[in-house]
Length: 162
Image (cartoon, rainbow, N blue to C red):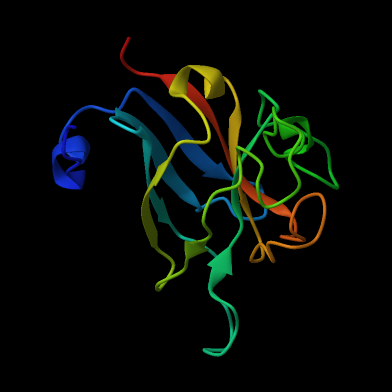
């Protein structure tokens, strides 16, 4: 069995990435979500900048973070990323067991870095899907999407290597 080393995986070029941009309401919000193929699954590495700051130090610093099934970061006035559709959920599981359910982002002075391993999807099956950042924390209970609020940023997952 091959040993898994995060630093080794992260030093290699990812197989896919999503360039994240904020909605018109959050134009400075930007970042990247990179997907690395590793033994045992996919290593997801997110680096996000200019998350909206919370007013009070006691407010929840978490933001919902999901892969959605839609293939475009377009929408309308009430939902700028409506075309991103719902959470990616090919197995029709209840929330929070959708393949697209990911750990929340933790806001640290407007920045977030997250690295985690998942075996809920292969990179090939998420290509063309969207990554969404929501305005509130996912409660991991409410169906179907965790009551994580408005979609504030989006990016389409594109291949880098083959």
